[in-house]
Length: 126
Image (tube, rainbow, N blue to C red):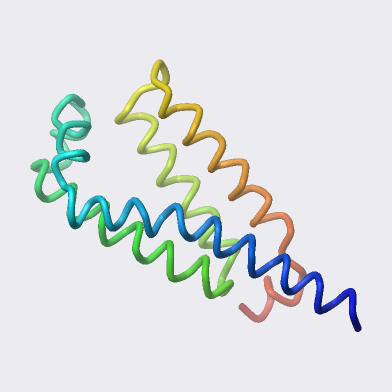
C-alpha cells in the first residue's frame, strides 16, 4: 500500500514538472508573444502555415491543452504522441543548430518516459 502511494506521489510530481513546461510556453505565447513571433518569422515553413500572430495563438492554445492533459494523466499515450509530433514540428521550425534543439529533445525524452511509464489500466481506461 505504501509503495502505491509513493508511486502515485512520484507520478504526480513528474506530471507537474512536465506539464509545467507546456504551461510556461503557453503563458509566454499569450503574454510575451514577440518571443515566439521572432522564431516564426525566421522560418519559411512557419510562414507557409500562417501569420506570426496566428501561429503564436496556436502555440498558446496547443501548449495550454497539453498542460491540462498531462497534468490530468488522461489519455497519456495519445497525449504523449501529440506532444512529440508537436515538438518535431517545433524543431523543424527552430532548427537543429540551436541550443533550443537540446531543450526540445530533452523534453521529448521526458515525454517518452511519460508514454512508457503508463500502466495498462491508464492505457485502456484513460
